[in-house]
Image (cartoon, rainbow, N blue to C red; front, top):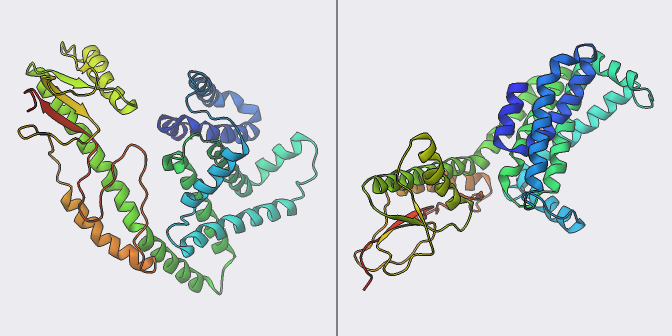
Length: 358
């Protein structure tokens, strides 16, 4: 569990809330052996300090807590989390198990006569003697706590709630296992119904799933291409200029001017300058597509047209499951839009500006 938690923190620091819920449960289950949890406590503590320091350094990752912020995030994140733009059946396949599982958990907990106990020791003893309900509460509270983090998010970005998707899938799986334990006569019929629902869910979302892979793959290929090409030009003594407009350009600056000199002892540096002018006499890296005069060009080594053809075919399949409308897709921040019919889109451009424009 410590390894998984550490890996999730490497992805995003907000996953600390999942570790805090798990740590509280583990402390209750290991009161007499709490020293074993010391590594877990240290990781949570260090991450908490990092989050506090980053949020107080220029206000990064924070936003004023207002009702408008809560309302905006509830509407937007619920739309994406429950696939409301895909189809109504997909939304129901997520919401019905979620709500029915919460109702079952509350009822089963009520039957154990835990509600109304005032002493903490009763709660600890209950956790130790009801492992299935304890694990269900762990998943549910983790899901609830991360949803609270999403509600105060400063940006509307799909990847911020990806851990919530994992927890929701785990919750639905638990509910299906619990339902299967109560079935006897209708087990085959319910199993067949679940298989049909799964086929529909996969078919309706398969285009979007493959699109995300193609989108991120295309981004990675282009980023590697611009780094390799810029590195080759710098090694050949060419001048490469970069204008820092956002964190994307700043990472290239850190790669060439901080990372490579420190770890590879390189002597060349990428130049930081203003937006490209007509007679810079250098190569220019940019995320903005420009119309260049004849004789100037940009480097493109990735053929996106094959990806677009594959996506177009999958679009038709998922469109059929979504009752004939164009298959739903989302674009995450920092990744390009790949057109359904082969539109040219790019993340980075490397322009040749050595000669004076005419």
